[in-house]
Length: 274
Image (cartoon, rainbow, N blue to C red; front, top):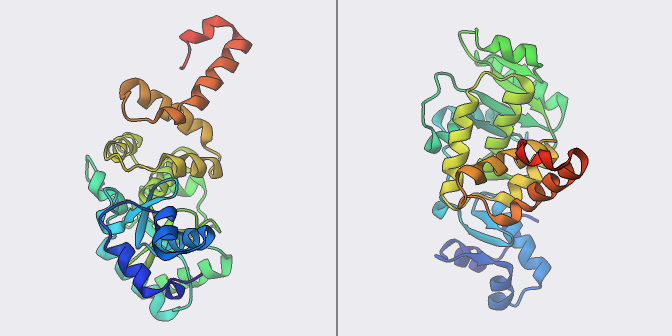
């Protein structure tokens, strides 16, 4: 479904809403079927017009406390690629997306582009090269380690088909903040990206402190990245330090895991990691 297929009167009403938007509100106010209402909201979220804040709950993107910062550099790269390949779809982001939550401004900016097919990445690499922009496709940990010593940080290209948690801002497909945080953590811990993990910790805490952090998405996306256990530990530790930050329902897995480990290792496990 495209946004253009949604009646303009409904789009205008949603975008002018000052309250939380839900499926039930659309069903009640516009006599829609629940599935149709759900599809409308999903499409508007995908196009970056609204932001999901909970199960079936949305607010307009402009009112989101987790508003992303799409830099002029990202806009320029998007324009360069689209000028030569207007029908090519790709996801584009950088650590500047997280600018509003920085504690320390990074000395180097990492830019990431994701596309579904290898031939698309090759095309993007060639287009960037024509504009004197260096890029690297599907870098290995060794490549990430060497990146730090280059004068110019190459744009990092990945072959990925996962578009979960992607919105559209000013025509640019870019990940929501929760996905940026998890992906950045993944590149640091799994790919040896040279970026301070302490800064990711600060960004995560500040994002959660807004009260708008989407734990449901973070939980599901961490699973897709095979990092469920990492974030299980992260959220459990944050709960110990900041007991009011983490919703209790996301700690049940931690408690269950702890019970199973006690069964296996005995009561002395209670003095362990949890």
